[in-house]
Length: 94
Image (cartoon, rainbow, N blue to C red):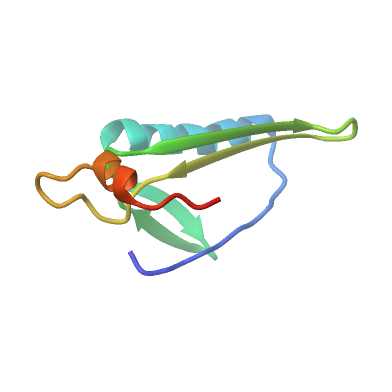
């Protein structure tokens, strides 16, 4: 997939948020691709089996923020090499 970055914030009801999350969950269970609408265009994002999930919860008194981030390699590992082996050899950044 070519380099791309897009961030948006929209107001949705709890039901609309659940529907969007459910669509993503179905794609993950089925093995993809993940179908997203970006700038009014439907984009198919390929999924791999090696997913990482990050969750953040912040409450500051005025707002509660729940962040969910999924990441995975852009392409499958070469035969005989897993991403965990590749990550172990990669230098760590501070």
